[in-house]
Length: 620
Image (tube, rainbow, N blue to C red; front, side, top):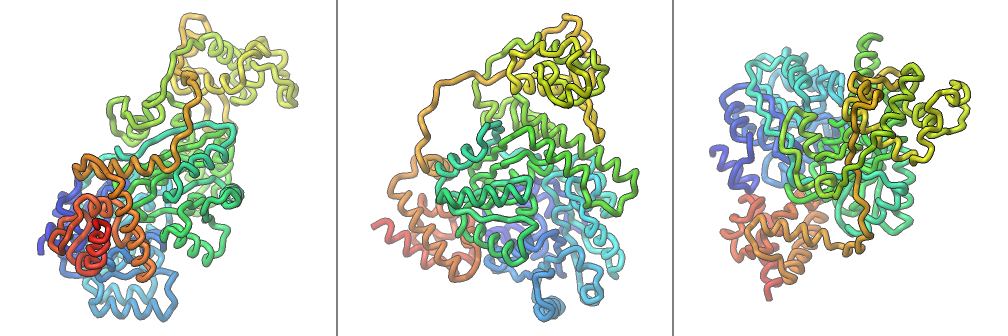
């Protein structure tokens, strides 16, 4: 078999995505690689297919149990022998899996980094033929990345102890240039092929909202998308509990996930989500890394995350099947405060010395600032994300909340001048809240303690709503008139550009959403139907008819039945996209079934008869 035959036979695809073939060829020639590919771009195939073509065993280093379980289940369903070794196994199960691995039963073995240098695992590894070590979520090796895991440093020690150095293949979805260089250096990659396929995910719709009632907006969205699978991210455990309880009381099938739950409850709740028993998962960022659920149709951030890397990784769990999905962030000013507290009280890097920790915190504050800018930019949101990761595109994507909103340009010069004047006259010594409270004329304890009621600009903008003052303050930061320090006490400082503003030589214009008449309430479930129409268009179908809608539901019910029988997630059987293709093509034989995207020989033989029968009945 060659790589194309493996792709079709086991995974059911006819062609490679961008970057995949190039990375596979490098691995198969014995060269190290570093692949930077967005979530849903097919990173896993880049090492799974070479693993099936190489002589020995491939070890896949994964950070989370859920990631390993998910990928191993999918491989076994496709007819590939794979296993995982982590703390979820009993000692007896672990020894049995190691014994089978030593006997050559598995081509791919997923292992947690903590296990690599244990005596039992080393005894196996030193006597095995290991042809490749694939490092998934490779950004975890860099302490300058957003998700540093000290256990990842054990990979280097492990590879050095092997009798023969295997090919090293590192992959991640989110890494700035600095982190990429760090990963390559720490893992000691030798002349690696570095392939960056781009960070853009055109199928994802991005939007930022700042609602007064976050829960009301969330509930309305979920009511309009009944039965669709999605994730709601909250910053704190308390908020996860609160939101989940309210959703359940409103009749929405939701479950929860955070570090405060028992291992058993987290496992059960995660499986309820993966198996579609609870389509809505409310969680902290402890949930999701490596979850390969292809039919997540939305990710809603109830709060702003701490940095763009985390946001894009979490948002990227939507639409892994390449079909339309929504990524909506509900921003509130308190989100910034909560994230600042997390940064100040970070205990994840206790092995760092004081200077290193201070540098990490400073970088975290700078990342938080850029994340905050994302929430109030009026430019294209996709363009903002891509520029953050070093890519440039036209400042209009046509598929984000800003590009699809109607804005009007407003002159905010007088408001901007009042804010800048207050900052200057108070000696550039205070934070955002003190400055805005001063110009708004607030009578707070802090204002009295700082004697800001004596400031010449006190109350000068009392008629301007506080939310508008904050918008203008944010705009001035974005445009380079002001900056806020990233010390533990954030202070607003003037930049050179602000001098012309204070002297009255500069005009400040700002885009603001145009007031629109109240729109008619969207049709319940209408967006789901439009998504299926969009999927149908991928297969050049003019229309997804009502009859095909009924067939889709019948196929989905059959998929769920098979998933329950085999105790695997429904999307591991077939993806929604594969079901859509079945509805359009309506194959009548095993040969025609193999022409469907996502159906390889193994699955055609295993499930073909039942699906063909369902299609025949649907056509009667």
